[in-house]
Image (tube, rainbow, N blue to C red; front, side, top):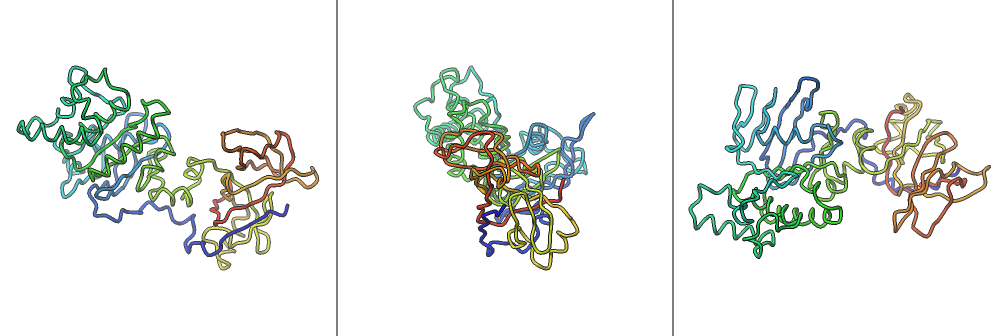
Length: 387
């Protein structure tokens, strides 16, 4: 068990991953939307609890989490489709929902909504759908705005088409154009790609991000798709059981998850149980030096000794396996998953931990094969109290 540990010690941060929940990772831009201590309850459950969040001007923020975590309820509260039981929502310099009874109706908020089912009017043409919310504009301004947006979404040639004549991706772009037409302060997107074929989702998320960037609108994008959330966002917020667990830049949330739930929800997470012994942590796949962990300095080693056992987060690209004899093995391959360019091998260690290891598609090992597991991460590893 001589884990092949390679770490760039200069990357180690100064604060402990366990003490930086990152909930106050506010945007660098000026704030356009502010939620403070928001609560929304139903008869049998609390959907959103003590939620506070700032959104910067021109920012794309994704809200990510499993079904029932409160992300769509949060979107509906911002849009005015539901009223919070407590807390305050400010848009620009206006309170649009507050503890004092203030509640601005949806049509007066200056917020655009893009629904997952497109919600196009079947009896109107594409152009008429885009211009639907511009009834107070004069005819020439409305026509010019519709033409501008049809050009923006690359559907100028489909202005006279009915929704039934449009593909799923085209319907989504028309729905987006319609929401952008009144020049909203904030655009809300509720699972905008969930009704599209898998093959369309990647191209459409890039297209929607392009359109948002060109208009400069502030957007909040709700999704349960991790890859979608991480790829389109300036910042991502992860929700669980009505609570906002972490908010930050996608790479920060993925690489330095503030809770075990965030670590487990984003990507493939494995946890190596580790016991402090002298000045190292002993795992089933070798020893870890203190400098290999996020935020652990020599002066903090006593904290780990007090924990007795901690769990170290490892992802598939942090590990490699090598077939070996049973006497020298760290574990056994229990599953092999082919992904085209790569294999993911699930390994159960001698001590009972389960981890996953990434290999190229030419590195083929058998289920049941005994293997040595090497740590090849070139970054500090995050740790959590043992469960």
